Amino acid sequence: MSQLVLEGISKTFRGVEVLRDVALTAEPGEFICLLGPSGSGKSTLLRMIGGFETPDVGSIRVSGEEIRDLPPNRRHIGFVFQDYALFPHLTVEENIAFGLKCSKTEKAEMAARIASVLKLVGLVGLEKRHPKQLSGGQQQRVAIARAIALRPSLLLLDEPLSNLDAKLRRQIRLEMRELQQELGITTIMVTHDQEEAMTMGDRIAVLQSGVIQQIGRPMELYRNPANLFVAGFLGDPPINLHEGRGVVRDGNAGVEAMGLFFPAELGEASAAGAGWDGKAFTLGLRPEDVEVVREGEGVPAVVEVVEHLGASALVHVRTEASRSRLTAQSHGKWVPEAGERVALNLHAGSGLLFDAGTTLAVPNVKLRAPALPAGAGR
Image (cartoon, rainbow, N blue to C red; front, side, top):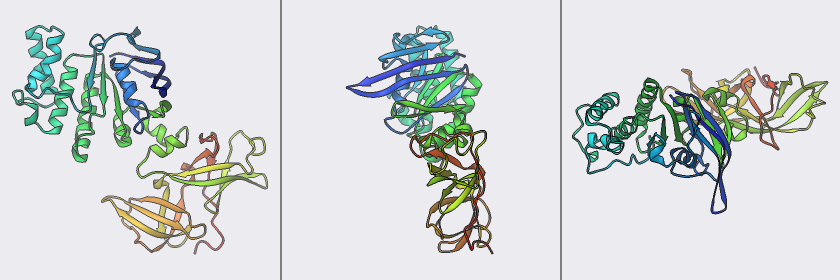
């Protein structure tokens, strides 16, 4: 197991900055996902680790050794490409053996490694088949087997599941995670799919415009995003976002949003000292923190659209007082119908607050359930 350390990685292509001062450490045996939209720089960063691109400045170290200027074949790193890059004229075992032959592995050792990885990835019996005779999932396993047969110090995965259908993706990502844990190999995976990142990564590094916005464990990023971008990028269905402003009433601080007043506990910061009153905020509520109940006690609302997802449903509502739209996630037996009047319980304790100017999360603030508008309730 190897440690990967990136420090001060920056890269500019034709005057366009694609990576800026990137720093990242992957501990031995850790699985890290590089997550971000197209053009965020995540694949470029992966290619730099693999030796297919060179940073303008910065350091790339594996177990303390600087590898920035080494060619790919001297880095001892396994790379699985998005399109798998299998040789169509070679069989499964010949594809796996290709890298071993290049590294001049002895025949007996080569045969033992091929047999071992075929068993690991579940391809025993398919050794003589060519790639065109395999399913997409089987081709992906061959690409992984070829990479791990070399016993690399790092495994790099460039959106390895993007060519698979949704059902097969779920199956393969579980198999990949189990394999990575069994091998204990330090792994870096690029993906734009936040569900893949949340389910596979020990930690996630979220990139935007060549900058790492936040690094952390999946639920840490989900529940405590550093800024508005991370909050909006993680989560399906997306977070509910609404404009708000700070209010101080009789010395008590809160946030007005959606026509409601959310009391706030500011921790050690005083409302006056923090310039709270009148400050512009963005309030975020995850769909699972918006509870839809039968009309009565709660914030009055009307159901606009219901999306049935099987075990759960997404309920899109509009509040009656402020006409604010929210999405709720329902897992109960009762699901309302479009046009039905309902009530909302907003679990503001899980709510997120962002500075409207900087888009950074506001620290040390705990929101409470909002006071109901006049006339609400039974």
